Image (tube, rainbow, N blue to C red):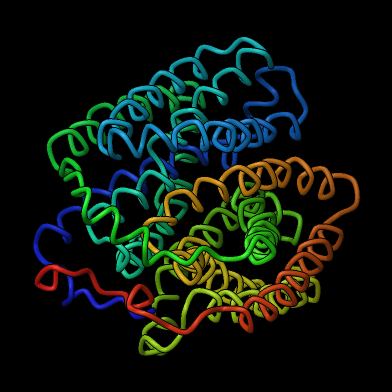
Length: 409
């Protein structure tokens, strides 16, 4: 699915730019435990695994809200829901900054999860689907690649802020940034949904061919296995690199390079020239992940092998960021896309919720190789499932083209 920016008109480019800024800030601010997890744990009297469990609560809340909000998205469109979610996110960071123990800390993450379900990835996909229709794949791919910059920007920024004003002050800065930057961009920059005519809805329904139930479960399994690795590693990457032999400053520096590499992974998609769909690119990335894990197992603290790991993992996770969002387009047309995405969001987020505490627990108790071995096993399982899905996919149709219609939108 080639991302051809020349196929986007000015309106679509504006939407992509606004979503890129708001999604980078949204996901970047949620990475606070990645750089301040031990500081948070010490301040609140918790162990490190409990500090990282906040991210798990986030994903559980996002997953539970997804099917509830699906109807709201359908009735109201994405923009008003995203505005509400942005306000709730700011409230979540204020609550977190005032937390005095584990209960209030976990409540803050539940609030942030509720906000994320309304304002982050799924909402952005639905809005792009409103703008581009069934040809939204290219726009979604471009957005997901750009959001890979969130860690590159917010890990060093979050680390510097935490050192300067503490993790509580950092949370308040994040809340202010969300209200001052994200809310006005969404309110004044994003378009309202244009409701389709009854005739158009009927035509969409006649041409929709829903995927079989078995195919849906295979799709969910492959996405969830890879998400267990990539979502978990996003939370524990700095601690993992420290365990592999890097100092704190080096770990943040090496880890921050991931976002740049993830954005560079777009070159792989461009090389496909539009011939590769989300399943094919997902299969390629799933193969790269175990290779990356093996490289880090053999690093023994060597900087150059850790750099190779960062490069391979960054490439794979960058491709998977696109594939995870676009694989449903291989099997579902416009009429089914929002529904399928909402159904996938619940198990996806529940699996992603388990990953950070499981991986940080393994890292603390059994070391780096235990984490890498489990990640390699999950990625290999995803490879097998995606190989099966590649044989089940329907013939390529217009919705696999990355362009937006309209001049060309």
